[in-house]
Image: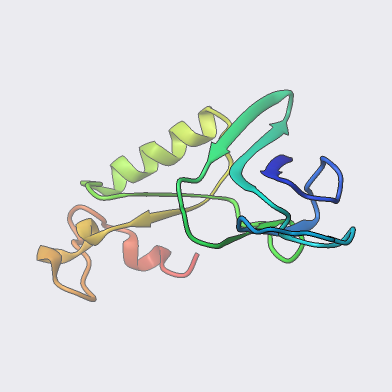
Length: 132
C-alpha cells in the first residue's frame, strides 16, 4: 500500500497507522506523524491489480494499514429490496474479486421501517443470520 502524503517511514505503508492532518512540522524527527501535508489517497496492489482510493473528508482522520486492525471493504446502500438482491450484490463482489467484510443494510430490511423489526417476506433468513 502506497500513499497518504508526507510520511517518513518509506513508501510501503503496510503494518503502520497514520494521522491525516496538514501541519507545519518544522524540525520533525524520523517517527513524526503527521508531516506537512496529508493526502487521503492511497494505492493498493493486490494479485497484480492496482486499486486507488480517495477519501473526500476534510477533518482530521486516522488510517490504520494493518497495525492494529485490517478493516476490509464494507458495502452499504439504501434501497436493497430483498435478501435475494443483497445476495446478488455479494455474488457480484465475489465474482469481481472484491474482498468484502460486511454488507450493511439501511432501514430497508425493517417491517414498515419500524425499529427492531424484520420484513420476513423480503428478508426471510435475516433473523437466522444475525451475528454471523
